[in-house]
Image 1: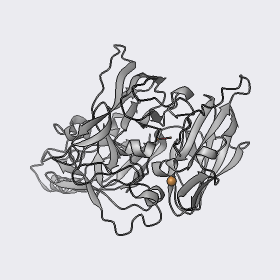
Image 2 (image 1 turned 90 degrees about the vertical axis):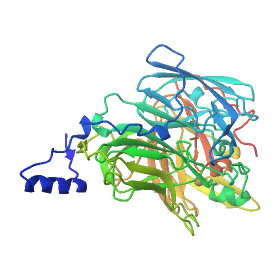
Image 3 (image 1 turned 135 degrees about the vertical axis):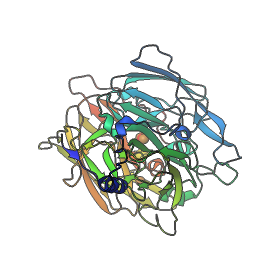
Image 4 (image 1 turned 180 degrees about the vertical axis):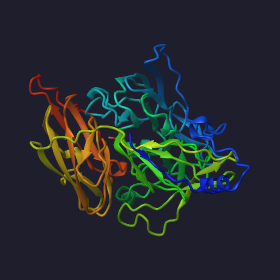
Length: 493
Ligand code: C2O
Ligand code: CU
């Protein structure tokens, strides 16, 4: 195991003093020998659902989607759309191999479904309305049940009228742990980032605010939330590592996570560990994406630093005349610094997909502006699109082309992919940013779970106006699957 050596600047005076003095002060403690500061993540706590099943390997919970008053803007109540009455919804926390059972009830005034973003689950559990299940009507119920097969950071959200429903507060975090991960990564902390379009009185702006421009640019809410809170405080101890699991649950906002005086050790992103750890200055997390990184507090004890949202390039006008905004206060407690644990560099053996016989496809992300904004894949909005036909077991290479003026985070349901780019660390992903005026290629192996699966831009306003399609993976040895449920398609156009 190779170890990444990191010099901690705040240790240097202590070491110099150690060398100079007869009366040597006690050497710093090791990070492994101390805990996080008392109440370190209290302000970031997310609701924990009640587990109805005594089996330690089964997490059986109830989730009800309903409107509830939530205080986001201090002193005001927002009639948010919630899972179990809170924004965000309950955090689903399991380990590899656990079975998750969700008794879901829709008490919203509109139909909905839950999509389990990034999880490799059976097709009929995927929550794609009109494709894998009928939308769940007001008062309706649905039982979701599947295995948590892969360690990683995931999330769940509706897949009906998704920009509006996610924008009103419907999302929750999923953390699937691998008990074999080294403790040196530090204590897990999920940071679920979202924004809400609220006015000063905490009232929700209409889902179509901004009209065509809102569709074109993607709607960013003015109120930034971390785990449902406006500018909460996280307590850290110098040198004591934390493993941040960052989830971008916004409709359209990009995050460039960086903190003055710090670097991150990036472990991976969407679907568990990458092949190697990377020492990075910043983490770009686009809508739908996740980042998994070790944070080593390096500020002087007794000081506070601020993690800010900084304007992040995502195409036309996206950073123009915008200021950074505070998101999270990071308070370094007064306790003496500790020596961080070394982080292994080699994290996981990942085989590059064999693409020698792969079918090539071109996926062109397109925007047509007439009296309205209509987006599409290869010029076709999803309500007119025919599914891609794929044979079970095939590997495909998709060239994703973006000639538009905006960047698009491309998301595929059901399967992990690899980005074919020598410059990137090898990892499994389900969402990847395709910057404006660029292209990239991904490889996917449709190795199991035949059925119909969606792919789309995860700027949810873009998906809703057409930048979405679906594919059908067919098992040639099995009878044809039933035709997709088209009686009530995913759209409302
Ligand atoms: Cu997170 Cu089809 O979406
Ligand atoms: Cu887009």
